[in-house]
Length: 311
Image (cartoon, rainbow, N blue to C red; front, top):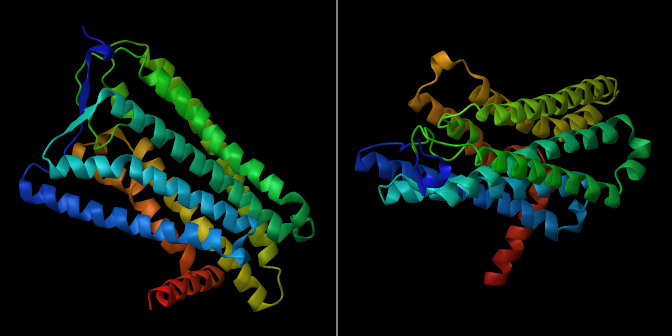
């Protein structure tokens, strides 16, 4: 029996065996990664530079873009490098780092999405108290709490996961290191401790999800009572992008972790992992900018300014 300390590396699951398909995987991931960098980078720059966007909603959106940029950067570059150099290796410390940052960033993102639901609830259901409840200090505290909670959970889960003896193999059945796949390598009952922590985390996530659902039930009740069509359209434009991002995040993550074992096999698992870990960070900027006139205007001004400077 060997334990985790005897592993100096893990072997990740390859997307393809043939060189042509490996290069195709590299090209596809490069395109998605560049799209995520461009989209999130533009949102971060626009919100930071345009004083008209210095509001709670865009402050939280800036934080969301930072989290998306960091999360996709945690797994995609390593996967691209492995395909490019035809290798599957990831060091033991690199695997632990991936687990920590992915858990940290995903936990913080869902906490932030919950805070954003509260922001929209206050804006629509309690507009007279918006300035008091969503002041700059309160927004900073809520964003900091989202980041801090993610960091705490990640530190707890990473330390717990990598203290478990591993003796089955050093092959991880995923294209990045994730906790459920590493637990499969355990050779003792100590993995049940980490499973218990994951169940507790799942309950907290479910609690946040219920909070979001209840918030939107109240929001839509108020919006449908707005007499003017323009007012309803404005309210829906503010809420629907956030609701779409939450739905994408929750549906892909839920399917990835709660799908029946009977449909679990390497190829579908790879595709599902891409859907919940790679696609959302690239799609979120598009979802938020599609129906947002203020953000579009800020981006247009920023692009015009860059063009003027180069002329």
